[in-house]
Amino acid sequence: MNLKIKQESENSVVNLALDTIKIGKQALIFVNTKKSAEKAAEDISKRMKTTNEQLEIISEEVLNSIQKPTSQCERAAMCIKKGVAFHHAGLTSKQREIVEDNFRNGIIKIICCTPTLAFGLDLPAYRAIIKDLRRYSQRGLAWIPVLEYLQMCGRAGRPNYDMEGYAIVIAETSAEKNKIEEKYLNGKSEEIYSKLAVEPVLRTYVLSLISSSFVRTKKDLIDFFSKTFYAHQFKDMRKITSTIYKTLDMLEDWELIIRENEEFKSADAVEDEPLRSTLLGKRVSELYIDPLTADKIRKCLINASDKKLREFSFLQMVSNTLELRPLLRVGIKEHDKIQEALMQNYEYLMESEPSMYEPEYEEFLNSVKTSLMLNEWIEEKDEEFLLEEYGIRPGELRAKIEIADWLLYSTSEISKLQHYPNMVKHIAKLRIRMKYGAKEELLPLLKFQGIGRMRARILFRNKIKDIGDVKNADLSLLKQLIGEKTSLSIKRQAGDESFLKNENDNASLREWG
DNA sequence: GGACGGTGAAACTTCAGGTTGCCTC
DNA sequence: GAAGTTTCACCGTCC
Image 1 (cartoon, rainbow, N blue to C red):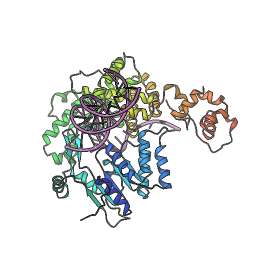
Image 2: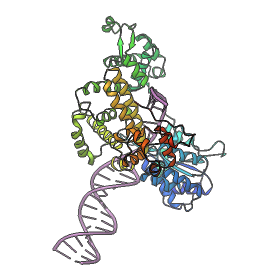
Image 3: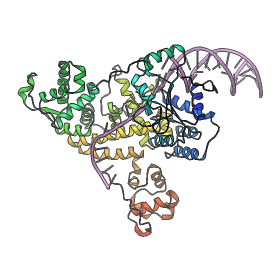
Image 4: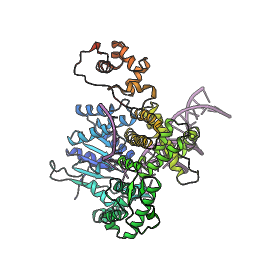
């Protein structure tokens, strides 16, 4: 099919976007990095002359969706004012939601996005414009899987609105055009491979089968796997069996399962060997963390018994797990700085530092950087600071916090089972601090509903530091500091009923630890 | 002569995403 | 591999 697109600029993506808007339609533009999503959105928005009231409102909303807007928020807001948005994992979930909703209702015309939008989310557009079919990988730039290409094309055409939809792939050269035609337009999509073979998945699965008593013997376990898609695809049952045996050995080493009878131990051939999970194994399976992570936590707790601990200790421990990957990367120029910070915190490490010459050292340093970043967060550094200093965007920060929190909770649970009850309190505090990004001194104030790190800090600065202070505080001062509604609410939560007029306010103090 | 500023080319650097897990109101 | 960023040499200007 031949499209005639007016060449308003040198940039074919911009031209396509402008043309789409001109014919009154919408487009999704797929690119391969967050940065280029932002750049593309900016380039297009610069060419848009008009804005409207609705867009102004959405733009404000996006700008102010976190307490203190970051440069990313400002950039997003600027674009949206012109009806163009970018969308990637660096936006907060609130911002992403705003973009998605307003694309659906037609107010936003163009979204420039990373592959986020190709999967899962149902966001169709008249045109799906695919700018990049190659993406950076270990071996340089690599062509993306055909399946992914199909996913992106699948966004073209909105079932209830348009009779048709177009997927447009941009090729820079004719050689590229040929390659794209051959690989994507006429090529076959890849086979789907079972992910069960991936080690972390396999060991998680094996543990869960045992701890839920779904399988009771080695034989049960092998039988189970022989019926999976993995086995069907892989065919070589002998190899699978040996992998599973190795997994069992690991789980036993990690004290997550028990092989009940000693006599079975020596004889691998005996398939009736009963399998049972330990108490720890059962809990780990319920917590749904990687058994390897659970083992790391357990060992760190043992190590920690004769150590001084700080927030950094826990943050580094949870950072250096598969769950938290990808970690923040230590750039070439930061290397010395991070190394130095590590030296300063060395005595607080719960795990032992790998040798500088081991391959895992790089990832270890990354975990140090990641934990330093989380540490800054709980010291009340704002998102813009973290973006500038650590290159982490608000959305990514939130994602990391959520996973780290879950791992901290798991650590707390494991320490209960392993008889380290004194850890529990520390971790509970740390979790709250991480949730709010607040220093320890704000903890009492954070118990109030409607009070986050910002308001708590304001109150604290004005010598209102705990529930008692709130109770005794002058209401007019409170109103000045944090507004009328919140003031009345926290007065009530503090048990000071003397001002009470607002019967509808049922907020009560948050409870924890 | 030297400090400063602007310019452009060369040298570096970096690069997508995300499901459930738990509990506590 | 390519886009974006930093570095650096070079040149002109002003004091």
